[in-house]
Image 1 (cartoon, rainbow, N blue to C red):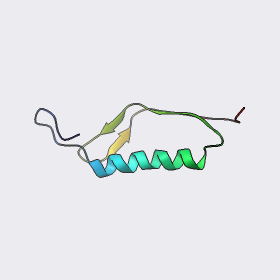
Image 2: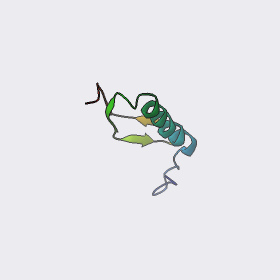
Image 3: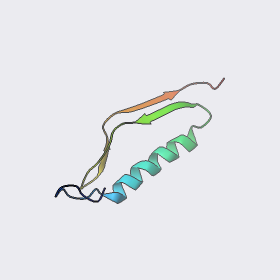
Length: 61
């Protein structure tokens, strides 16, 4: 996150925004959210990108 082998550090504000957005989604849909996965979250010098995500919704048993 702080830079590696001469690379620029990650945009920590963007990473925090991404994590908080997922948290808001989980809170808003806790009754129906069955599974959520973001892998990888690319932490870039300018921004953060969820390169792949799985979100499963459904009725809770």
